[in-house]
Image (cartoon, helix red, strand yellow):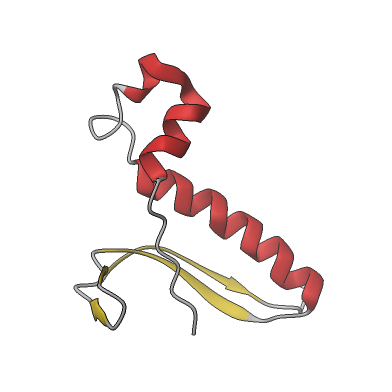
Length: 88
């Protein structure tokens, strides 16, 4: 299992939407959710290319505490199932 914590989501969104839009982060734009959504799309494409089936979750709440502890109050924001079979 992989856990990926994006530590600069606000900066990434600020770069993409500019300084004026950066002021909206936290008010209108959820930076973490936007960056996670983009990452999920990229992971889905890469997994399909490698023949990997997976469940990718974007969840709100977990935080890394140092290097050895993960705090997990989980609320699922989005789930994507990657399969190699074509949907009917």
